[in-house]
Every structure is written in C-alpha cells, then in structure tokens.
Image (cartoon, rainbow, N blue to C red; front, top):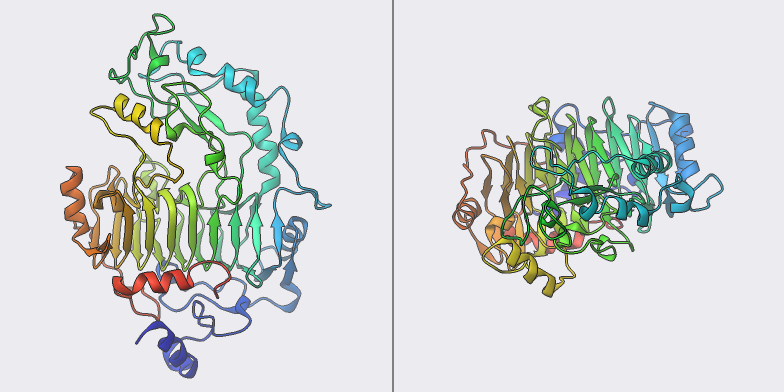
Length: 493
C-alpha cells in the first residue's frame, strides 16, 4: 500500500489503526491540531508528541510579528499552546516592527575592518604558537566589543520555545526569518510545521585563527616559528570565521517533531562574503561565515523526528552532537530523519556524534567538485582558486562521527563528481550501516564502496535496529525522488 492509499484508509479506520489526527498526510483542514503519527520516528518512542493540540481556545494565537510571537509565548507559558504563523515574522525587529540591523547592535569600538586587520594572520599568527596553533583566545578591545555586540544581537533574535507548543505556518508563505528558535534542556513536546525558516544572520562572526590550522610544509614558508614576513606560521593554512546562530537549535530538549518546513540562508548566502585575507588564508572554507547550522541537535537532546522538510543552498546543515569530548551525550541524541530533501548543501546532513540516527527515504543532491586537484594541499589550494565554484561543495552527506551509529536505508544520493565516500563520510566514527540506497542511479553497498574509495574502515555493526517507521511504509529508493520532491518543504501540507 502506498502512502496516499494509506492516508485514505487511515481516514476510514482511524480508531482501528490509531491514525486520529494523522500528521504528515494532511487529512484535516486545520493542521494546527494534528499530532505526530504513532511510531513516526524516535520522537514517538516515549509517549509521542502532541505539542499544543490540547490547547484551550484562550491559548490559540495567530501571530505575524516578533512582538506577537514573544507575547503569546510569555502569556501561555508551559500550558499547551498553538501559535499560527501568518506571513513573515522577522525576529530582528523591534516592538514597532522596524527591522534592526548591524548598526543597531554594534557596541563601540567594534567595526569589521579594524577587527579584520587587528587579528589578521600576518599580525596575530606571528606570536608564539600554543599547542602547535595560534592562540585561539583573541584578546583586546575589538574582541571585547565584538562579544558585547554578539550579546546585544542574541538578546533580540534568539527566541526560547517553551514546552507543549505547536508552531504552525498558515498557507504556503509563513516565514520566520533573521533569528533563531531555541529549545533548551527541560523543554519537551514541541511541534514545528509548515514554516519557511531563513537567514539567521550573525552580524559579528568571530575569527578563530587556530581552527583547522596545520603546519603544512607543502605551503612555501610555512613553519612553526616566525622568521620574517615570508617565513613563519602566518604562511600556514588555517583559520575560520564562525557564526553564532542556527535557524533552530535543539539544545537538550526532547520529544520534538519538525515537519514540512523549509530551511535556507534566504537572500544573504555566505557565498556573498568571500575570504578577506590573502593566500594562504583564502581557501573556500575561509569565507566570512554569517550563518551557522540550519538545525543543530546537541547537549543531550533526544527523541527528535525531522520529516518532509527541504534544506537548500547552505553549507553546514545539521550537527547531531557538537563535540567529540561530550561523552555525556551517550544514550541521547536519538533522531529520525525521513522524506527530507537536501539540495546544494555542503555537509552535515547530518554529521553525528554519539547518537543513534535513523535516516531513510531522504534525497541528497549536490556537487562534490571545487576543492582543486594536485598532489598536496598547496597544489589543491592553488588549483581551487581557478575554479571559483558557485555551489556549496558537497563534502559528505551523512557524517559518521565519534561513537555515532547511523542506520541509513532507501536514501537517494545524486552527487555530481562524487563517490560513495561523499554519501557516508568517515568523520572519526567506527560504524555505519546502509541498505537499499541508491548512489548516482545505481544500487550499491555504499558502506563497502565508501571504505574502498576512502581507504578507511566503517564497520556495519551499528548495534541497533530501527522499529519506529510511522504509519507509512518505507519507499524503495526508486520511488524516493518523485515522492520527496512533491512533498518536502513548507506549503506542501
């Protein structure tokens, strides 16, 4: 029985099949009171997700501004509540609806040009290295002012979502833009559906001179000790700009369902902000990053289902577990992703640490070219500057990180100029499993092929078996593209 047939039969036999308020099929006109279907992924493992479906009339709101959103959340508190998003809610706006921009958040003496010049590798990196890297703790009045500016922006654009909440977009044009929804520890039972999320823009990204820094002698003049302008650590590759905000941050929360949403950088993609330092700090990855993740799931967050959603035109989409050192995440970070569409996304779809992640019937489309060709990093770097790719380079779709256990099935990967190692990448993990997936039009043993191509070894023994598939059966890979492109994203309920 296909999914459309199942939805029809579910309407007739809802009491028998347990499909009352069937969520992803859109059976009722008022989607705001739909709940997570039974057994639909990890979010259903411990009692399901009802969000605000049981809200009294007094706690059902229609909001079209940041102020209305914040006021409704404050009034309702932890009580069941439904917030219907109408039109565009700009989180970077004041109570009168005026959009707040960089100048509204800047704390003197910060300005980007002075900051960039003060911490330039030619200035900062010539100091003695600490543990074989430039000092990663920037000091001085400009860094202090930047951090104060970050605090000022954060206090305005980060909105905390309380328990027992349904956030539901009305129609096909509901948007939440220029800010972040934050679901913290202690928050449970949240539904987010049918919303376009765009452009959580960080006006004050920080430069980390030690991020990805390496003493790589293929680079002329690269060495640990400073000698002169042409020889020293300032001639080594490394350093990254880092942004602060995700579109949704699930940090310690549990029992969360995100469905039929769309995520992107909007009309300010990071491609508009290329590297600002000269060679060798001008790799593609050293662009001035103003956006962090699309959805990040961290800090013992648990029992999350993300379904029927569209992620596009962004570099790093989703972290599940944000540090190799957070051993306390063991036993948490259980996440299901199904029927989602990733297009022109560079990596982290998701990258997983510690969690048990079930990924099925997802569609990944991208291009792995652009890092350049050559026998060493220097030659590849030089070559990459000739290509100047306009796409986000797809480095890995599923990233098997430390102590992760990804169970992949019936996914479709279309990765131009790529290999199965781009489909499931070895990111310090030990295990990953796949069955029934398609890579560039062929049914392959993706794990075996990824191991062969990369020269690394991922065991297939992930130690667990998914059993939470919801009311609809897993589609064969041959049917995934048609289904996902027709159904994934906001406005398609």
